Length: 175
Image (spheres, rainbow, N blue to C red):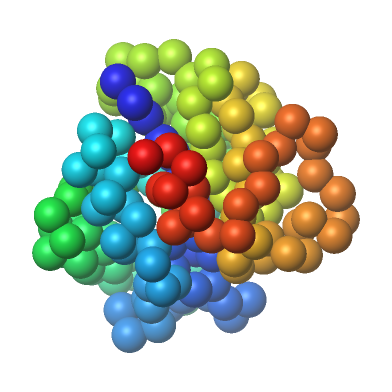
């Protein structure tokens, strides 16, 4: 199985320091939906691991998050592809869960779902927490410059990190 794991906000859709709270605020980054569809059609399983502490903070209900993911699935399907397993952490940063990145719980959940190891699997994110989660499970950390990616890059990233402009560039590399 060719597995690719993506963070959501800042990688697939635009991010906001004020959180993505409504379906209208969930706006794909140009080329990201097409990239996921192209990867899917080329035999890649594209899974998503996303921190969604806005649920714990009361900014939006679980139904809104599910609607965002349904929209993502529908847009990718319109391009002839599919989105694999989506896992999210609904907890706040102080709740002590094992799923909130930089902890690796969500990545492990994806591995369990597909019954695969994570050694060398690309995990694409835009934050230090994403890169740390990848390293914690032996996955390949990949940084995109979209979202918080440029700020993350300025602060320094692990030397093994692969760096791309955006998700479309990753699709071109892998296909």
